[in-house]
Amino acid sequence: MSPTPSATPRARLSLFKLAGPTIVGNLLLSVVHLAAIKIVAALGADAVAAVIAADRIYMAVQLIIFSITAGTTAMVAYAWGGNNPDEADRVVKLSAVATLIASVLLCVVMPWVARPLVGIFGLQGDMLDQSAHYLTVLIFFNIFFSFLAVISAALRAAGDALTPVWVAAIGNVVNIVLAYALVYGIGVIPALGIQGAAYAAGLSYALVALLFYLLWRNQRLLLKPRPQQFLDKQRLRKLIRIALPAGIEQFIFNVSIIAFMWVVSLYGTEAFTAYGIGVNILSISIVIGMGFAIATATMTGQNLGAGQPDEAEKAAWRNLKISFVTMAAIGLVLGANARLIGSFFINDPLVLDYLVALTIMVAVVQPMMSIEFTLGGALRGAGDTRSPARIMATGFLFGRVILTAVFYFLEMSVYWVYAALIADYIIKSSMYLVIFRRGNWKNAYSGA
Image (tube, rainbow, N blue to C red; front, side, top):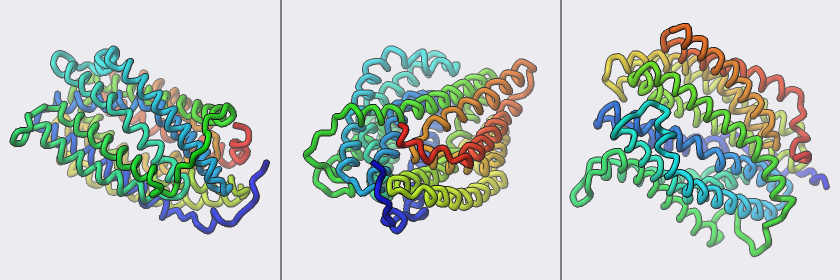
């Protein structure tokens, strides 16, 4: 049955109220990651490389969690836009169970595969063992992360972007304090080296998950638990149909990142370390783009749920204009201050030179990233996760794999390999504009 058109979603949805808190929250998270690298940097470039390798693999295996929360976002936004909070609650519970099962399976598998996974980046000896242990620690705490990921995605989809920020901010502060204490040791706390950063992150996940759970169970959140059955074949099928393409997209994205990092590692530890730090610098602009993506997904899903597809489209284009200008300005700041930014994290002259070049290239792609994030968020919020997967695959194949292989086998410098990022984003942003203009995404949810 088609939802009854309602003006409610239009009246309550605001780009800045949705994107603003999300951007702040994600920026805080990026600061935590950068702080962890800064803290570990005193232990040497090899230690930084070990942490970067473990973090990259950790984000890759998170594709299962993130794909499920993509389904959570679309389904909760659609239900909330259609004034059906009971269905939103059922989706939250189903998603929480699904991510819990996935996290437990990862805990079983990871101890057996952690070492070969981080080993693809060329780590050896003690740093290889340290990186594998770091990754395993994060995976065991992933049980907590999966719940906070689901509840945060659901709250944003319902229009509450502020609560996830202040709850996560508490965890971020705890993370940084614990990281310094556990890495170097304070008083009776022993120095754990890079493992201290892993335990600090894990304990902060556990704290935030517990706080979210207590707020949720005590009816203190916008989404309130109700005593009702939530396991349903049709609901599960819809979640899987939305989540599966999102999972494929995440898989392609992470394979592309890992493959790219592997090629960069062939140029030496300095080039690899520079890229790892550069990715974390890039994460600052990425989280801003993600704020626009999540806000646009919420606005699209709720407007479609309320039977207002034209308003969903207008909102997406309005958001794109704002995000384009915002991220172009970020690119200008990054490019103009590339060496200053890089020197904050590393003093090694060769690593710094690589990092400056990479930062300038990252600055160039900022406007194109805004297109990918904003229109990608609109498509996912509409339940169309297939198109982003196809776009990601195309950009990966032609923008990264082919060009990177050509540059490497022609023995061109690592600067050319870094530059493949620009081709990747040109391809993806162009495809997003074409696919979004076609408008087929407006019927994606009913067909999921």
